[in-house]
Length: 489
Ligand SMILES: O=P(O)(O)OC[C@H]1O[C@H](OP(=O)(O)OP(=O)(O)O)[C@H](O)[C@@H]1O
Ligand SMILES: O=c1cc[nH]c(=O)[nH]1
Picture 1: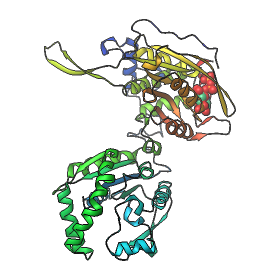
Picture 2: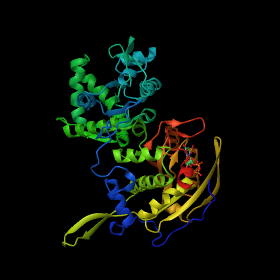
Picture 3: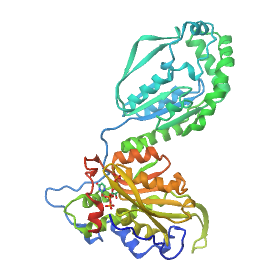
Picture 4: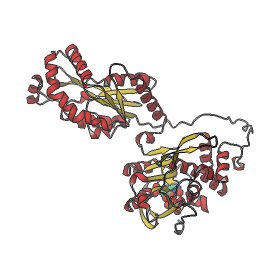
């Protein structure tokens, strides 16, 4: 670890506003050209050069399909809103994936004798969350999420009791759980990667409910309406309707099917299934798109034979891309300009009130990329001393008004996550809002991702690659070795 260095605000504007495109330096333009191939003397392969004999040139996007956790979707909405049809349509569209569906109804509690009497007299509230064995539903979801086989209860609606036998559910790529209370139960909601609410008018739902219960549950119209008035509607007003605010997607579902919504949902699920497990779990994690330029740069960084100058060159290239990705998360204001042709261009204005904070020493290697993008940005520093499993903050120098700024926290390696968490806590203690912190790293090991993303769910973590893990010496594997030594020494 290097000696602490003073914070250097740099020339020009002090609010860290990203540079406008016309101010992008020559260096930046060359860098962009390099990333499109050909101009870079470090690349080794000139434009048009043939591959070495026996080595095949491949195209496409690298895949990360390994040790996958399923993608969990919750589908909720009032009684007879069309939840099951929405689930069926999603399953049909994802026919080439392994999709399983379970219903909240399977988890009705076994009734006590006095409750059974009420149920037989149509006087038991099956629409209340207490009617559900929430612990068992949660446990099943958690086991499915871990990729384990589960036994799902079978509920007999006529007897108001569980059957002796159960249904075995095997691990799947996608698990859909549907039910009126799925989004109303916080502990269930927390398990879900995608929350859908099926929105259907009350009168349409009541009409469907009467038709269904009379046709398939042996009920008469009067008793269905009575149950609706006594239990179903009050539970809807209290629990189900309000739970729609937790939904990621609200699907209007009236008399005809909403094909566009199903298309959008299934495309999103397909995108998620192509992504790494961690991205599916954490909304606050972003892994930059992996193309062969990125893989090529990483191959050079990870190669222990790489010279210091090449290591610095490619680390800087990735840092620049990381900074641009981070800046892309900042808010913006609409701005209209007039182009040289006299036409209006409706665009946006970059966010103000930004600063960088580098974790000494390796994080300082990312400062140049930030300065190239953001004119005169203030950059603070934090030094964390790692010893074994614990860390101490030994130095910090931060902008005095940091509590009013967005912070790009810079550290190329996320290992256990202990250093990052310490640094983030320093920022929070200084009054920075958690949602205004963006942590940028070149590589991230899963333990560090879990730790940071779980501890600080509003901090955005942006990385260019996810590694396999950390070894007994807390080194990221496969990793890049000691980043600071390779960059500076
Ligand atoms: O997630 P963690 O397990 O806490 O590890 C990550 C830390 O390790 C590296 O720094 P290092 O201690 O090697 O210091 P240096 O930057 O001075 O080389 C890296 O730059 C992080 O700060
Ligand atoms: O692998 C590692 C872990 C921590 N710090 C590094 O520079 N590399």
